[in-house]
Amino acid sequence: MIRPIKIRKRRVLIDIDTQNDLFLASGSACIRNHRRILMNLRRINAWARTKDIRMVSTMLERPGKNGDFFCIAGTDGQKKINYTIRNRRICFEADGYTDISRDMFLYNNQVVLKKRTDNPFEEPRIERLLTEIRADEFVVVGAVAEGAVVATVLGLLQRGKKVVIVADCIGAHDRQKADLALRKMKAKGAVISDTKSIAGVSHLRSTGLCDCKLCRTGARLEKQRTSAIA
Ligand SMILES: [Zn+2]
Image (cartoon, rainbow, N blue to C red):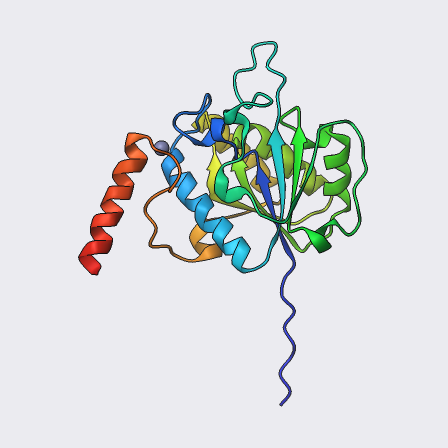
């Protein structure tokens, strides 16, 4: 009997605004449960690298006017958290143009797109890329659920894309609004999943990034456990 050739699913990781201000305790607008979400993000990013999954990252860049207090252009808080950055990447400014290259994923495995607003579809280049990109599945991580995530996901669904939300990799500021946003995305057709189902279990207990007390305590516990096993 001839076994069928399995074609690997073409997935794209949609990485929304994973920036210091939103994910680190020292950031200006840190999400709830940042430690747990950072650990899951680290896991998902490692999984995506291993599977050679291409990554589309959006990155907030606010001008720092009109009461803006996070992800302001040129600040440390605006920078992406380090395990969401790949070596072979191409970056685009939020300049209102729509130019993209058809073969950019041939030479790069990450596209980083800056944007001025939560909704990425307000930026012409991102709108074009997310409309034209073909993949079987768009795996979504990032923040915040009640803002950029819901705007991105609803826009993808409107364009007929299949969206899988890694719920425990999604940060939020307001739990009630985030729950509402999640229900809305689900009602519109998004599949809700989690890190374990997608990337399997991990022995990691530290974020390896944030140095707040909570994250450091977690790292120490991990070290103790590792040495106990060894
Ligand atoms: Zn922390």
